[in-house]
Length: 226
Image (cartoon, rainbow, N blue to C red; front, side, top):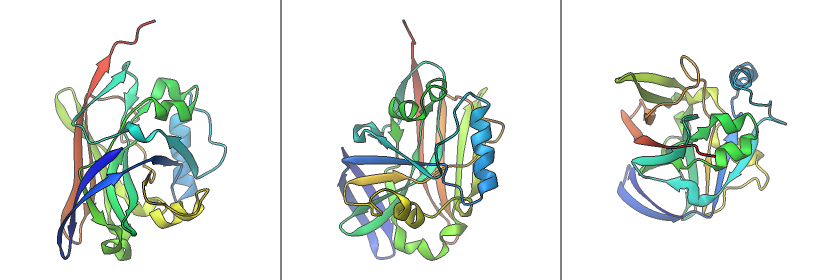
């Protein structure tokens, strides 16, 4: 899956054309076990079974990665989750922001399948991980939804509540993030509970440099027929 990124670096702008062949969703990635438990319970309330271990790594088809401004889903039971997204290109680690858009109805049956059936929107911009690594915990992850015609804050918190990308990479099966592999790095609880929305905006904010990686997409709901 060819994906393009504009990368703002201290040395200027880079343009990357990345060919992804592997996509990994790192789940239950919180550092604080109590916070992880809260998210597990939040999903259990929707009928989602507890994970077999934490963190847990789900494989998703790489062709599910998209930078489109509009995505299509089947049925009204899907929702987005803002997550940092990391990948290696040219021997360097980069970070962007993505949404682990998930079918919540199917999630009660199979978390793996619920992730596979939805595309994973990712921003068109990225940063060098090395340029934010020293103050990674200061970065803020947030998302917004449009609800009843109003833009509402849906998620917000420092990435310090989540395991670092380096920790997640080290704990995965290969212990590395090869070229062509992208990984989402976990999310945080939804403010007011998990719910669908017609518009989802995700953001990874760097307060030191006062910059953000952002992406906004609309959700086109296809009829669920039988």
